[in-house]
Image (cartoon, rainbow, N blue to C red; front, top):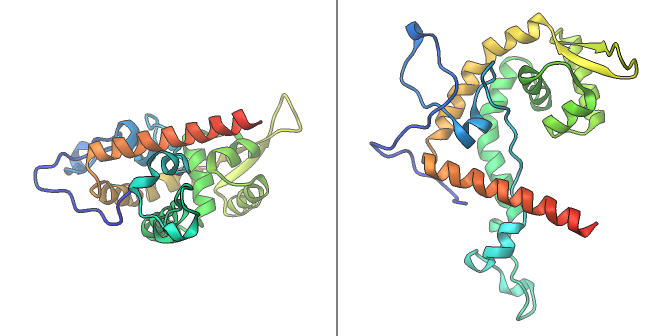
Length: 227
């Protein structure tokens, strides 16, 4: 993972995608498909769900000697420990801090916090989900999602509907206001992702997401084997 990425070079291919404006409004833009689209594609009838997890220690265990390490942290002959500035957690935090502010500013324009955005973003892809399903998809704890849905409901963006087959189960649905918000907010989000898309080449994005998949799958498998 690099500390700073170069802008896209002249002649470098733009990333393809799944959303475009009507023909009369269309201008040349980066568009996202494949692994890139799964993270960056705007919500719509043909959009692919956005669900990528974070890096974990598998990459360190296999490529530790190629990283910047601190030999003073471990005895001789033991596995080296990355320097703090290049540790997995620090690099993930630095990436989050670099990427998040622009998106938080967009959410703020529409009076949403990041957790609220994550929940309504999931609902734009699939309405009628339970609290537990929303929590899993939005990567939030269930008690947090309950509070988020309460606030979204007070804002008139979502509504609760009890299941007709299981009265204990409550589904969360978008209101007309919640659906209209998608049309208002997503153009700005799409533009932000297009700018982010120029940080790496298409091949580099493919490699990044492939490694993310491999790491997450490997860690989950390791957790299962340890049980």
